[in-house]
Image (cartoon, rainbow over the protein chains, first blue to last red):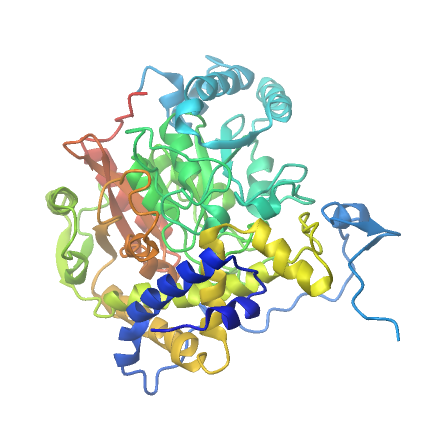
Length: 94
Length: 489
């Protein structure tokens, strides 16, 4: 089976080397081939399972509780300033 | 009882601490010295915290001296898979992308162990982001099987299994998404338990596939697994999939006679072609042993077993592609220095930070979720997951527990399967169904191959029926002649 490796790598936001492109395209094709037996199963009327044990509407009290400090929350950010995470410019100036 | 202290069970170490035959600080030193002596060969540890551990051990000794012991784990040195959060400790997931990440908080299971007096002293190797069955996908080092250093320890929790097997910590925690506790436990000759989905909080476990992941213990005995499960099980409002049910005392539920009258299912689909004949013979002998202990053996059928691998690798990679989207260069330590703009930052940070298997799975997961393929792959896999769950529900109307091999082979050689991802995936055939159905499973040593490699027996229980599962496993273990054997390192 063929897979458009460039399109999927773009969806995954991963830049691939030329070697990775070729290896992954071949390996993912083989893996998808192995998945083909799923298409032969009769699943008409079968509900999908997102979890093993369905749990719905998990709420908790809307009351304040202690939260992580700003310092702790930002301790792993690669760049920070004024209690905020610095990122490259997203919008060009007009 | 083993003459070497580092090969003794938690329950034995607790008795020694209680009788003042050893202090917690001395016990910690025993494991530290053992680690220094063997970890150059085994390679289980990624980082260690000797000073913090020594302070925790001193505090434990003070509690015992003042009669304020916290429980059976007070003063016991525990290792943690390097994806479990402890505030101030590194958490790398064995990935370059998290090489410098330090946890800003402690996860629930680890907090429960800390408040039970456990001493965390080292962080253990794994396949990157828990993706793998051999521990060879770690970005940092290879871990070797203590029984044969030319072989893999299994994965993904390979470091957690090898460290317990080699006597470098008394017990450890790992995580199991498709067999990542049970398979390495089997290959390293220790006990590994994957609890029912929802029994142990996942808060503070770095997510791989959230509908499948569970934290569980590696131990030298079933009794120790019960001690650890007692400490870590329970409802947690910080995990919305945590299930709010009563937790029994797993330790007092253990009985050596529990297999008398037990109904044990053996699925015909699990004795497949390509299975190692020695593994097969050993598991068949173990089934006879259970019958000899009074169990009734019932042949059962799990007809959708052969679909488990495609279902698992679609669901797990889809969830992984979503969970690992957060590693984008913004918040989690590593940002590419080469990036030209914000989008380029995503592409390059992930290209530089992720290893080959992680890239392969995130791309596969993106594909099965993508427009035009979602129904054919992801949705269809979720429907077949329902059929797999129903297989188990029907089987458990007739039996109390299901017996299978844990792994189709003993430990393979390093490098043997690394270039063929599909053959590596097929290695998970006996364990992944259990995650898809959300059931508890335990691997217990059941024999040693002629080549000197451990073989594991898997017992699968009903959801939240760990008390019975552990008790059956205990009865089997007490009657097993391989009980108490250790690698010669």
